[in-house]
Amino acid sequence: MDSDKKAAQRFEQALGEPVAGNGLLHRRAFLHGGAAFTGLAAAALTANDALAQAAAQSGKPPLSARTLMTQSTPGAPFSTYGTPSRYEVSTGRDFTFNAAAPGTGSSRTPHHLLDGTITPSGLHFQRNHNGVPTISPEDHTLLIHGMVKRPLTFTMDALMRYPTETHVRFVECAGNNGGFGAALPRQANAGAMHGLLSCSEWTGIPLKILLDEAGVDPTKAKWLLAEGADAASMSRSVPIEKAMGDAMIALYQNGERIRPEQGYPMRLLLPGFEGNQNVKWLHRLKVSATPTFTKDETSKYTELLPGGKAAQFMFTQPVNSFISRPSFGYDMQGPGLYQITGLAWSGNGKIAKVEVSADGKSWAQAALTEPVLPMSLTRFRLWWKWDGGPATLTSRATDEKKNVQPTRTAWLKAYGANQGYKFNGITAWATNELGNVSHVYV
Image (cartoon, rainbow, N blue to C red):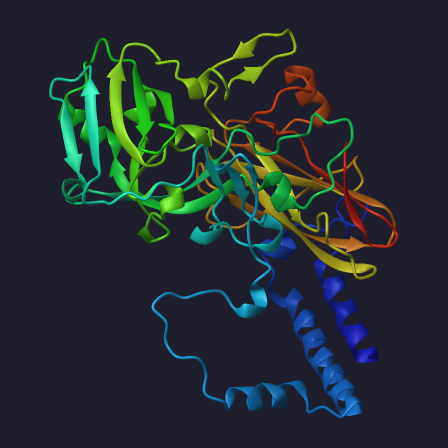
């Protein structure tokens, strides 16, 4: 055990002294790990020795021997589609729905249980307004009409012949992070609070190709109505500049055909725009001179302002971040070295930097995991040497357009406590002397 402690001490010394209050270490530990991790490897070796000793005292065979015994038994046969380990059954989505309409509601990505930046397709969040339709690709078509020279109807077979592109992009519900206007901070995990956000590799047809083929009126056309084939006929207005820019008719998600809950057989993808505009089960696009003012952009998805007015067509998701670990539900195992990690994103492009604070006063810049892509989730990491005392962990993101994540107080001043959309204020997790983590306002 003494060698274990010495190895851990060498590792901590190699990481350097804190660069911000309450034990935040320099991001170079992640950017240039190198020899510093030799100490960690030595600590792992001595920890294995300790496990072997404990096993001997308990009368059980060493861990390595137990593993070999298990592997000598024939394993499970092949399956047509892989599933998670039975030991990971707790990694699932939480969901809420209207009891009178079970298909209306949402499910959330469990960010507190994940790492990396790509969300598994089966854990991508859902927001449905009237259930998930069952649509045969043989019967489904996409109509483009309105202010075009040639109204066109595309079958799925025809669309599969068009050129495609692949991009990693996040999709975020405008109502993600909701409830931050409440008087008391909600005690819930990072997935429940920030889980209406997911990131995938999307493959599909640039929408501009199809609009050019239809012949959009270059002088009069200013908007596009996108309509879904679900029972709610979900529909939203989209600026023609976005449609002719980086918009995509997405056919594949993470390498496989889009799943029904994500819009099979096709969905609209508008990088950086609020999720509700990324219309699922897309079947109609109408080019027009004005927005359509649909039920989905008048009765909701408008942003209340303190003066009593509401702002419409505020499309872009603002710069944001949160710490996923440690967070609510995570119990600290005594003083020592911990990794702080979380996600940052912006509808305005790439994340430029993420800063982390453990004392509410000083900030340390976190390491960003490459590649840092526009309109994509960016993973950040930082070592934290917790001394066992009270601490408040927060993150603050800045994007390439120099937009900075505001405090909750600043956001409430601009929008008011009754605004339910596009909250991007700083989230804070407090750790007490017992190692319990709770959600607090700062």
